[in-house]
Image (cartoon, rainbow, N blue to C red; front, side, top):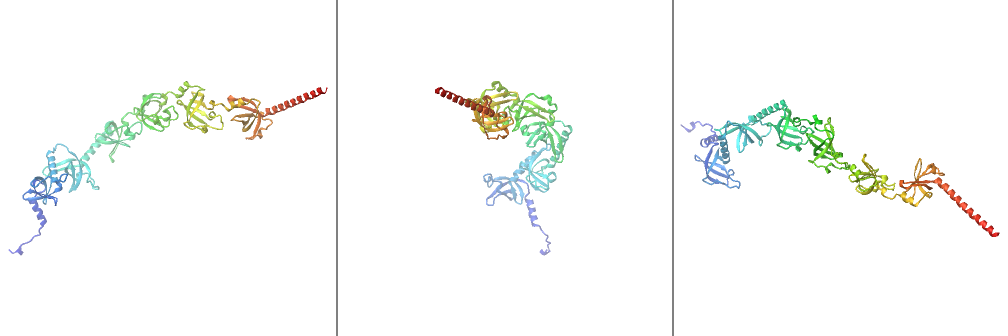
Length: 549
């Protein structure tokens, strides 16, 4: 037969080469080979895998942490065949571990595993679980095709183990659907019975806390924790605490279970008057402090408010934190129970002795004390004396009537005062500073007497008379009937008026002057002077006559 007579067929040489490899070298087989050569320049380890075949193994797979090669020529090494003259040391170790797992696998038991999706392959995903690679078909993955699942952590159940093919198949779908069914059973039971069940606090947030009830998580909103009202759960619970809860509702679309702790416990406000009453003294724990007052925990899921004005008898409480601290136990008196508004008010100062009563037992009007100016108002200054406050009115601050307490003092000044009145019922103390000083009226009275002629400047006009200013801060009154011959309507402020002192009461700072009496007094003095002159001239004439005789 001639050469040209031979029919030549199209031949796929690459396929033929692959087929020759298949005949001589199988894939995915664990074999024990021998190191025949180390080629560091090419980063290869040449391994004799039997049958006269050598395969390449990347050196990176066998180097230790320090970069050393733990094998020498002639050493035995277990590898996994990959085909085309390639083997893997790392894959061999994984295959051995997988084989060990498959050998120990008990089909009577359930295996729930957690792993990470490492790559996609034909028909599904490869999931790495503790160094082992399991196969998860796409139909059993419950993973969305719209997002990339690589790197996603998942939980699944083993559904098939094939020892011959050395493969393990897992299903995320079955586990999720099983969890959904179990969750629905739990929800149905909770919503049907509405009975309290015990749960475990798993996580606490600013808006509430998540509680595990029978393997399902539900949210207890911060408004559903206590009958006191919205509270910060972190102040009352820690993760791991057991709590009683009841189910409120379940949102199937969002798979959201709402729970309540307060509904699982009796509402104290339903029988509040059996628990506590106005006037009762109870021990409470300070739970929160604000500038305007303090919130205290009474137990029995009850909270009360202690207003800043009820903290102390001291009227100058700047902030309750100066008197109390969070966590402190205090005795308080219940002063209000408002069932409709679910509000309790208590007092701390009502259980303390009233400073005014103690002060009044120790002091009386006339006592002289040293106090501290606490505040100054338009009408005077408040002075702190042994835990109480007294009022130093502007009129009692100084004999100088043109000055007020604001002109004379500042907050924090120490001042010596005299008690002029104590009103225990009203809780008021009247004080005087000028009472400790000699009054200008006393000085004036020492240097003047009734009948003295004085000159003053008009300060003020009233319907009943005119006030004139004399020397040394002394004022005097000229009544309308004592103004003659001056006319009341013609008198102007600042005008000087002469008169006679007609009355003096230095103790009560009262001096009266009369212009009318001055006129009579001047007439009388002029007449007396004239009479004296007449008497004097008659006596002289008589003497002359006597001489002439």
